[in-house]
Image (cartoon, chains in turn yellow, green):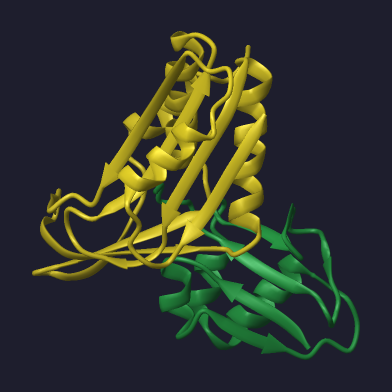
Length: 153
Length: 82
């Protein structure tokens, strides 16, 4: 399987990245993608800046292991993960996951699996700055539960 | 010098994301937390919280693991998700 994993500190264009990914495919019959956007508000009210910190090297390795895990569960031709770090403003793309397979279900499930990993287990630390100042965010219980759906046994 | 990395809110408590610490001999992570806590109670107790994980040179370890003078020790609080 071909994989492309990137942590980027500048804005990226999901549409052009997806077009490049699609044009690289040889045998796939289906391509699923998910684009995550910075929300303009959270529980604490309006968000003006979202800041995401990662651990260079270790964060990428963790994502690579998750992508390898997806490849062992589903017959994927290719997977793409692009994740922003640093400071972002509402509505900016923060993550793009794309998966391609011969049949659609593998692509749907692998993309879902990778997003659940990114939302609850990948090494990212998020803070939001709003009217009340800056605060660190932890995953919602729902994010943990979503990720646990894929655990074996 | 060992390089200490504090992620997330731990960086705020430590007054910066990075710190260096000279170690004349290897120390267990739990001992280092005790040393840090002796001069900074708030940071020491935050580092000792059960949900904080540790990594030496990019590999997850437990609190008994030994840190040597050239190592990079990272304190990883619960992740926030992307």
